[in-house]
Length: 114
Image (cartoon, rainbow, N blue to C red; front, side, top):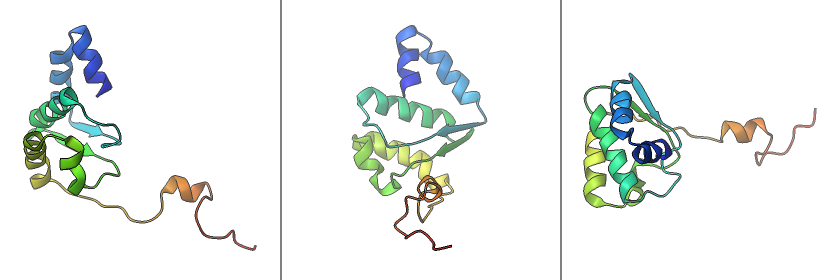
């Protein structure tokens, strides 16, 4: 979203969208972390629409799809985005502890007595 905002400011927004539309796989990482304003909602839908049925889109984050309507904040935009993403998606829901947490020994399990 920051890159789109900067592109809007310097006039390169249409070129950036065109470049992203041609990218084979676009990854939206950490989806749902920052609150979306009206412009970000529009930008998100624009990116999704550009890719719909044409190119792959990977959306990763800790926000379940059931919470996307609330996160996106505008029912019409949320419906449009979800309609384009969810119906042709392969959803992968991971379970268990975070790998970062387990690798740093921050789990609730006591240390082993070796």
